[in-house]
Length: 212
Image (cartoon, helix red, strand yellow):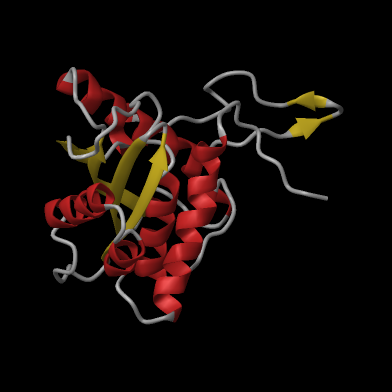
């Protein structure tokens, strides 16, 4: 049987996890920097390359981190907008903690930068929440979850710091409503791999790792 998800969403929301996770595996197997690989693959799309370059610059990608910390990145196109995200995680006694998320997005024309930033951050939080712990399960023919007490969302104490850059290089106007969600899960999974060497290919990740 084909595994299916429970999201009421478009394909981009979940496909980013598989696409960008696999691309990270290709980079590791080919001993290629994940950022450089994406730039090479997107060379025909200058606006996309600029997004990758910007988020890498923001996160100081490539600089050495203290022991017990790591970064992962992901890059997706959805709703006509290019979005790159880098997630930094830390190994703590309580589990893996998401410390910071950098987001660069090219929306073509930014009509309201404040709303765009809020949408990017909230969508990333939604994506991280789903990646970490959200799951729909069934018992006796019924869904077991009924509200946020048993369909866990990321708490304020778990939320990382965010840094956002809005670019306007693309020649078409893109959407911003959900575009921060698709790169969130793969960026987190790739960061966890960089930290632990464990490759996560299914969601939620709480089945395999503990989050602080």
